[in-house]
Length: 526
Image 1 (tube, rainbow, N blue to C red):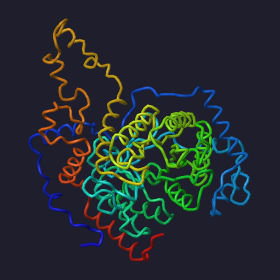
Image 2 (image 1 turned 120 degrees about the vertical axis):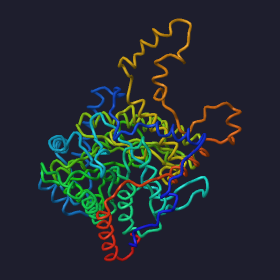
Image 3 (image 1 turned 180 degrees about the vertical axis):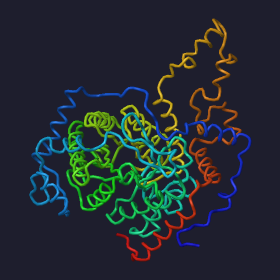
Image 4 (image 1 turned 90 degrees about the horizontal axis):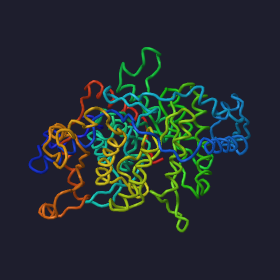
């Protein structure tokens, strides 16, 4: 057996059938989120600024770009590209003529694009009125009710890929769902990308921790997609991956991120250009100041991608949270980051590019009431604002330091609710329900009418986790809180997991590439 292959437990090979009340919960879970490749939004955007206010922020962003500049550190090629394009380059500092970055983006970057999945039925559309939910990203720790908090391992990574694959309300497999610290830093990306391909057929993200790791991601995607990797109409690679390029705010791009950005842009793979900002530490404490800096930083990165490869798909990203002015610790679910999110979503629409932000963010260490309300106060603005690609939809705890098994299941439930919210109001004849009102008439009830019976299975969102029974029923079932019910649900889902089909020849080619790359590279934790 190849060194990359794992022995699947017997429970994976022989799915067990739930019975009794568990079966009813499983049925509710299956209905909780429609199995659709992405959400098509049917409600208006929530706006917090007028056109005049948005114009002020755009002008301030142009001032940052023209007068203060952005550093492109330790990348002579990037500096040469900017100089040839007409920017003012002094050392690593680049200043841009007013309107230069905006023009490059608006002239070249697509307003929306398709990210292809291994299963074509799961292709996602990013931009426009589409919303794509992806899991949380980057946590070095995991948390569950059985073990508590510990460092993440590759088995945890595989588990979360499987859970995301099974979650109807998530449309994307994500990227570094957690950091498998049991593997060398310079090799773990191979196992992570392979896990996304092997254990899911949803779209996924590539590695960005070094240019060569980005290139490995591209090569693995090409193997996985085979002949479908190339668009016959253009002769170019299809967009098979989307990857996260973080700005080193304030106003710095480092060589690692620039190297990965160049690899992906040249290969026609999408990049999410995201200033990572904790307001008060990495940007001004005000909403307008943070928004102007975010726009300036993102514009510089998206414009650079267009210079590398005109037409390369890019997403304007915003990760802006606040800090405690007493301790300096990150805070989540507060009003100011929501206002930044609403503002940046409107600015992205005006610029004409897809937008990434939001998720289910919290600072809580466990899946408690703080985690729930902070996450809800992040996810709801995310959906109302019109975010196109939602990273960190499920699992985020402890300001991103931990990926929670129980929190993941709770967040998946909330994401299912957002499906229903974003679908808007049904005004079809069935939605208007005039036949039901006519049938029932004054003074009667709707429980037994034909319309209610016809819509019984689909009426209202049904949570697979919330307990709406009587106190006595709840007590008889063990007086379990939501986290305890979520603990049982993730275990049951992993026990019932069945992998998607993967051509054995493709699997063999993937493993061959991975093993050759590992053999040629000494272990390193850098």
